[in-house]
Image 1 (spheres, helix red, strand yellow):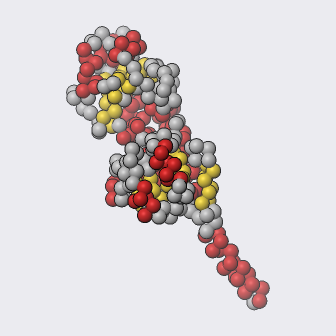
Image 2 (cartoon, helix red, strand yellow):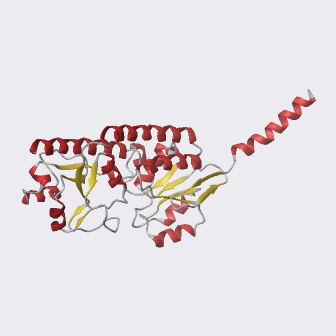
Image 3 (tube, rainbow, N blue to C red):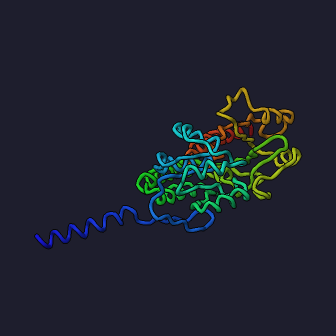
Length: 301
């Protein structure tokens, strides 16, 4: 009996330590982030971060988020702390977070410096490739103490992407111009995750080699590239008979392959531009659109 009592005493002493064991993860800046215990109060400073946190099983721990953090629906109820251009640092401090997840290149450097002055651990999020979304989920799961939920979400995401890759990546190539903005005319280079999505679908980003990440291009450059398809982001999917104004303008050049074959596509921007699990849905839509372009191009020839 004495031995059993000693064992129980030792177990009781060990359990509180285990419950409050430190957690560690490496962020997208390559920095090791260590917390004395899993985060309980988290502030998200980007919409894609909010989606990642919820998908990783940490939605109940999100106590503050920036504007446009609208998914999942529960995220709309979270108190706002500004947007990516102007953060409410006093509000952030008042929320007493034990972790702040930052968009590495989306939040102003001056404000990041002021955040550091709060001495609250920062985790930088900047997924560049499709596979990075799954990695982000598991790393955040480590810091949140929600490893099982995060791993399940990562596995489901990887499965969705693998299925799309197996189905579309080796199909006949389709050259693509991805239009970010029409005035001035802007696109994305090969370092952006959307270029990764295009490749997943068997497409080729015609401006992949340009710098910087979001280069400005001329109408003449697009005409010279003569893409098979032009894709733009919309606020919700745009019916094919009502294209975005930025897409409609290309009809002025009927000899352009994308126009001649009817390959002007708009996809819900939230599904493509946010590096979070829903990008698998955006990728599925893009793959279907490019497959349609593939069949139209084949019919034209």
